Length: 43
Image (cartoon, rainbow, N blue to C red; front, side, top):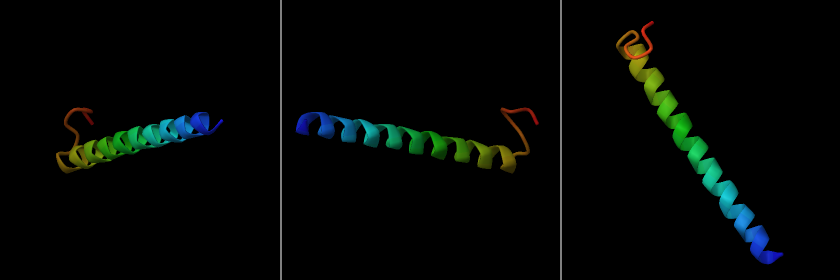
């Protein structure tokens, strides 16, 4: 039971870190798109 709880905690931390990195990349891309008035999105 202790090992499964530890494994679940690490998995949730890894998932949260992945989400944080994805959100940071999306925010950076939005900032770059806003700065150059579009670019890769073609707005």
